[in-house]
Image 1: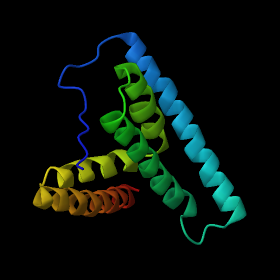
Image 2: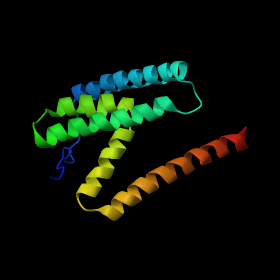
Image 3: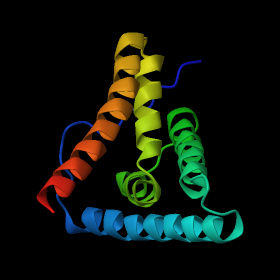
Length: 140
């Protein structure tokens, strides 16, 4: 069975309530991310980025649970989607959105695009970070 999860089509949600839901959800997600990062650093140490690793895996798992539920079992209002997926999970980790996008491309049979998206995102994101660091080092 293929995952048939679609995001709302093109129209921008323009009401203030939508932006507030994303704002508050994002704050909750970011606070949870910070809590996990601090807790992991204190309990496990900083030799490996355990916190970020745990956040990326759990965020992607929760995104899969929500997307799967919405696609196969039920519907949720746009406000709930914005609060949970864009807000909380977006504040917690954008890796969950990255994972969902990659799987949706794969599920649609777009294997080349999925591979390009995954490799391009990782390589270009790391290259962008290295470039940003180089620019700041050069300017200071």
